[in-house]
Image (cartoon, rainbow, N blue to C red; front, side, top):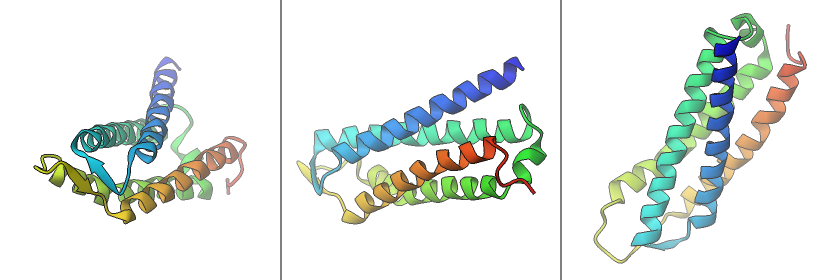
Length: 145
């Protein structure tokens, strides 16, 4: 019981940091950014990546090791939708992360950020808004065979 509580706590903390990083990115990102702004964006993106990894690992732990039996999750189609949406959000973040890492040491005073990365971020935020609704439904037993 104690291990489940600790894992759930870190799962929620990861979610809070993930959402915070997404909001911070959205507030900071612009079509043209100064070197100082861009470095902040790179750091926030790293926080996003770390928190996504924490959410993923703690989620896998909840699914396979502690808490409810794995069948509770595996047998629920809403869980599969939720998991797929999380993976889609993670994949949508990859092009921006690659761009940030490739350009983190650029030499100019400003850098142009492709518009598609802002659109990907908006889609990720929409996906992250849907996932808690699926989790609430799952907790109520909706979606079980």
